[in-house]
Every structure is written in structure tokens, then in C-alpha cells.
Image (cartoon, rainbow, N blue to C red; front, side, top):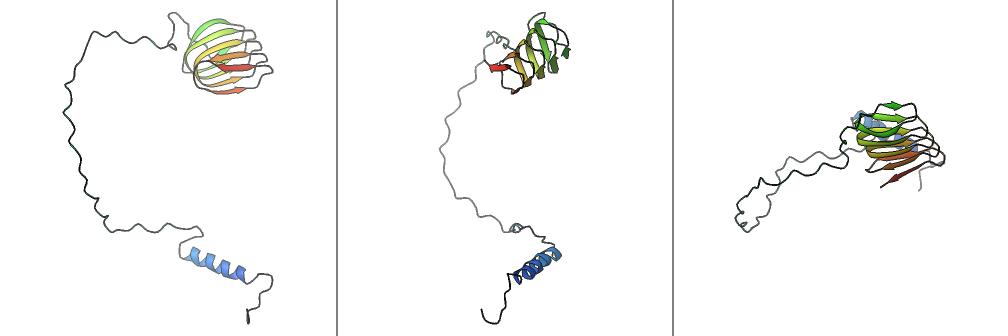
Length: 165
């Protein structure tokens, strides 16, 4: 290229800088912009033919059907509501009503029915069965958790387990 002196690629820098500044001054910035939408009307869709559907059958209703059985995660009759924190050893079945439950008592054997938001098992050697929970965290050493529905599960405890059945 005669007449143009290129030293170490430096002439390209002022050109790129000038283009960037020109784009910023015109409101374009350095990001690419999408082209403006055309205001021309869209072409009409091609004509299609369809066959007429057959007439619908008359609706029938029955009132003798029994109501469906309660789901397996419903609260059993007489289950007390689960406290938000079990600080001591506890055994039994408790009803979750959408809140958080933390189990700190070691050696606890619990069954949580209903829907919990979060269950945290800190108690070592605890055995917990959970019908439904959005999240489960198992920190207790040798803790065993069984859960029945999809959940985000984190197991941190030494020899701790969590199994979906």
C-alpha cells in the first residue's frame, strides 16, 4: 500500500474511535440497533378451505357420582399443626399449612403431612417423612429424610440422606 504508512496498526485506532464517537453523537451509541418497523400493510393471507365440523353430541350430566377421594397429602384427622421449630426430640405426625418447619431435636421421628414451604432438618439421627415441600435442607449428621413430591433438596450432614419415593 503505497502512500500510507502503517506503524504497528495505530491508524486503525483513530478510525474506530471516530466511528464510535459519530455513533454516540447521533444517538446510536455503540450497540447495534434493530431496523425500524415498516409501516406498510401486511400481505393478505392466502385463502384456505376447511370442511365443516360434524354437529356436537348433546351434553349429558350425571349426579350420582361420588366425590373423588382426598389426596394422599391431605391432613389426617386429628393431626396437630406443625410448630415452626422443633427444638427438642419429637415423634409423631404433624400438619404443615404452608409455612417453614425446622427440626433441631436429635433422634426425632416425624411425618409432616400437607404442604410446607421449607423443611430444615438439623437434628442428628432424625428420621423425617415429608409429603410435600418446596425446599428441603438436611444438615443433621446421619439424618434420614423421605419425601413424596418434587422439591429442591440440599444434603449437608455427614452420612445424611434424602430420598424421593
